[in-house]
Amino acid sequence: MANLMGVTNPVPNYDGPNNNRTVPTTVKPNDTQIQNIPDPTRVGRPDARTDQSGADDALQSTALRYDSNLQVFLQNLREAPDLGAEILKAVTWLRGLAMTPGLQAGLAEEISEFLKLFRMDGESFRQFFLTQMESGNRFSGPLLSLLRQAYQTIPSEGVRQDILGFLKRYSDFSSTDHIGRTMMQILKQLPDYLPKSWHDRLLDMTARLENGLEAGTRGENLKLLQGEIVPYLGNYVERTHDLGTARSLLRLLVLNITRYENGGEEGLLSAFRQLSGYGDVLEGLNRLDDASLLKLLRENPFTQASQRDVFSERLASLAQYALRGECGSQVQEAFQEIIRAILINESVYMPLRHGLLPMEWDGKMSYGEFWVDPDAQDEEKGSEAGKNQEGKIQFLFKMDIQNLGFLEMALGAIDSQVDLSVYGPETMSRHGEVIAQDIREILKSHGLDGKSIRVIKEEKPLAITDVFPHLFEGKRSVNVKI
Image (tube, rainbow, N blue to C red; front, side, top):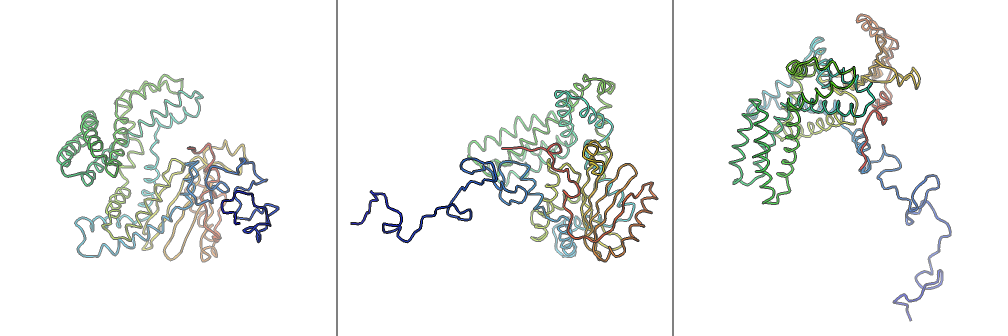
């Protein structure tokens, strides 16, 4: 009779279903039917689990990481789009779109003004490059340089925390206009996700806030935001249980309100006065009165450069049209990739300054980007000396030049000594010696010494870590484990 209930233990190689099955005597590592085989070359758990995705190779794994935000950033950086290629794609479509009749009012002018910014000569390119460098460094100027020096020399953790607290307030203070515009954009989007019965009061409060932001009355604006707008929207979410876009926008609004409050002048001055009681390095800060301090913070190189940075303003304005799909699907996709690449390079895990290099020079288009490390280490000085080496600046330029091709430059400078490696197509490398000599003459005319100048054929694109090998050391970045 068949053993339907399986009440007896089957004998291998004897009873029915197992007659044609052989029992393996050794574990085969490549057998996919056997799970969690211990690896003798690694120290692991008894069940061979690792509790992380892509444990074998964190940088090469395409699986989403949950154990480390830094590793997620590294994956995003490796998969980042080619910014120069995406800008070229967007500009190509925009040039054709600008000549299309019947465009939305203001869009044609916006595109035309944006494309005009690409035309540069030597002087305008110098100003464009310097503006990007200065506007990308919020913490510049003599006062912030003094605080940076104090942070590096004073061993007290309490002092360091207070310095960082002041810098956080300064960051929000210097971003007041941007935070205000962001809050207005959120409030103007919210009616699209609310029932009509909730529109009138929200629109009225939004108009009052807009007037208050223009007048600069931070205290009154905070009362309106915290006492009326947020409770009104919170009441809507509570009553309707709306967990969709409206709730997400409300959370983003609250975050910006917190930053707007943190950037107030009173809190900024209070945090600054607290620093003056720490040691000889900072005791001289008491000599600055409130008006002088605020003037010093408002008129630093970052603020002045941000006011001159027309390109970033035009790019952001045009991106709003493009991301809404008003310039066509091709331009929308290109701008999505442009914004994604910019955000990756502005991550808190990226200790480099990043900028764009789109220009039209002598009728030839060039699109590219650059990275700068103002605190680079000198590898030639040895491991210990290199770590203590000060004053080295390291650049990486990536450009796609019309009629020439893809070009990369790695430049390192210590005082007046310059090391420059240029990687390009074979048509350029054939004349490498002539080009290198011309570069030496240019450097000499500016008081610089071309210590090592190379112009060679590019075999493969340079990775960021090839030029900045210490980029992702623990001391240069922040790692957050969940």
